View 1 (tube, rainbow, N blue to C red):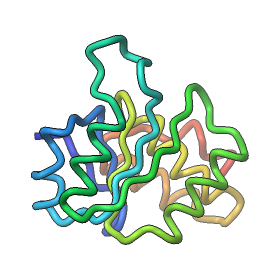
View 2 (tube, rainbow, N blue to C red; view 1 turned 45 degrees about the vertical axis):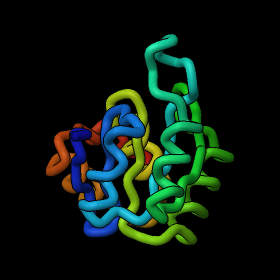
View 3 (spheres, rainbow, N blue to C red; view 1 turned 180 degrees about the vertical axis):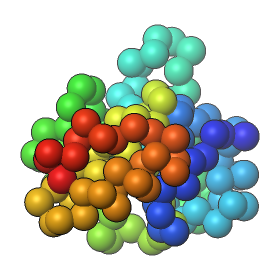
Length: 136
């Protein structure tokens, strides 16, 4: 089973998942999976988005591919914000370690005055977002 880390009631992150993890993800109540890891980033052994998408959709889950490397660009943040606004919740986002996904989630709230709450949510999920505080 994937290492799912709850951030809020409607959002969680995980390191790389596989199609074998999807039934447990669905059983845990997730309605949407967001993929933030590009195919092939981890070599030939990395599970591919197509297989994960097929497994998710076969169980009635929505699947959104927003892969990116490095820091999220404004375009990526807009796409993630739109996906979070439109996708059925709860949402599970994954990447290599979960850090990229939670960082992108946090930055979608930049400038909204919720910096401490975001940093605290990240800490409860096991991620140190304190370096983002000036941007939040």
